[in-house]
Image (cartoon, rainbow over all chains, first blue to last red; front, side, top):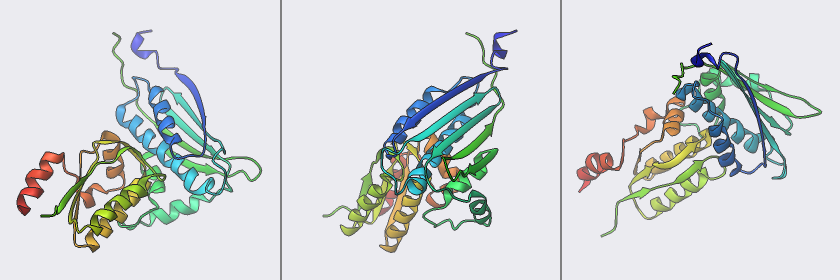
Length: 154
Length: 109
């Protein structure tokens, strides 16, 4: 098999747990940057980074708003040969994302001060949903497809 | 003579935890009667839509005070979020400080 095809059956699983504190986002972003593989196009990675930031902010603004700073936020990144899966777990009371999607699809005021997060997911992700679990944790699921770049062996 | 233009240069990650600091920094410039404000994003490595929300709020405040708000030097990710939210149509980002000086400052002096 030529070396440029070594990512054909690629599978990587990564997990990070951080506190519910806005500065933890620096840590999340640095960690995510270190996971990047050369066959993932730059624009795809950038969009995943943007969605990760949105998902993290949403946990702080909504899900963990009234919870202590020590409440963990768990992030899972699964990299497959043509897919990137992001999961962001929270301990909040959950919300109806489908309802929000409908609202946002009707258009948002360009001078509005919030409500852009879901619009960003809708535009960037191939799939986005929020899984509510009354007894345990909830998670935001983001799936992004990509066409791998041919990596020239050095 | 007092300045009528000021440059603000935030740094690092702009998210829900600190975006309002930028907003209040600019509000304090408006209190000092500064009418032309440039936010130089060259040191901002990452921004969430909370940052966009704070910028929109700031823009409204600057306009209400009869001022003008400019932004420049967007990093790759900041440019990405501006495009995704169509904010580049509202803010019309400048390439860098030099463009601000040439296009904006020269017209007021």
